[in-house]
Length: 166
Image: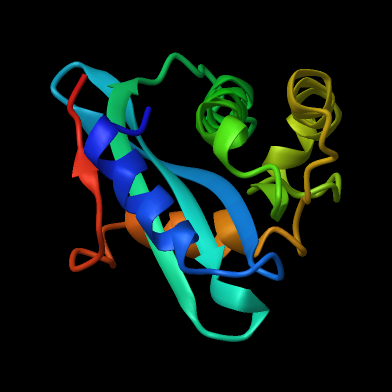
């Protein structure tokens, strides 16, 4: 979850923007072996497309948790955790963003040849049921597939963010 100071930064950013601003939510994860277990590092982001034409502000947090998926090629639990985390971020900010258009992006492919497809319907249904928003999946899920992916893989160290180790 975003901490109070991050929410304040997000709200301060939104205060100076018009209603054409778009807000995108995304989450991605990476699986790594640590000690005796697999762990997943999750990066959850909020990307604010300023006035729909003035660049972007990116806010994020990361967390690390044990990954209990037995089959790495079909990462059902890890991908559902991504859906849980992106919904949590959306619901945390939803009371403050009603005047803006927003989207929820999942880093999930619907093509059966990809392992993430095993959870596409389940994760989409969860997001829609909890938030009332139909999530964007690959290839339309740039907030998750590009933004959160870069943070989860450690490529964006100079951006606002909080790292919490659970």
